[in-house]
Image (cartoon, rainbow, N blue to C red; front, top):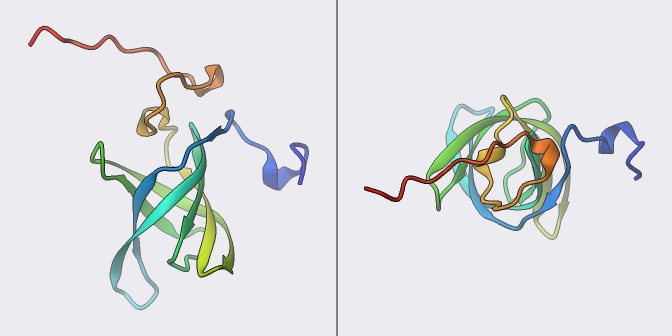
Length: 121
């Protein structure tokens, strides 16, 4: 796959990041389930993760960063696999969320404005 391939085109630059996240989803049988997954690649608009949970394209999921306790609602764009029991899940945020990822120096095209920390508490 190349950058010119429509399935591979991105609205913001990718960053390689392996991060343990929780994926919460409402399944077709009506149950809500939550599993641990690991990101492979992220950007300001979503990313790619490996999950033991079989999801479907256009399915709504919530991704939770257990370290920051932030969560973000997403849509599954594409799913591949399984390979070694894991599915590769491409997802996009409902709204760009560059601050969701713990990246100190995000790419310029993520549109992140540096925030000044208030250390005077």
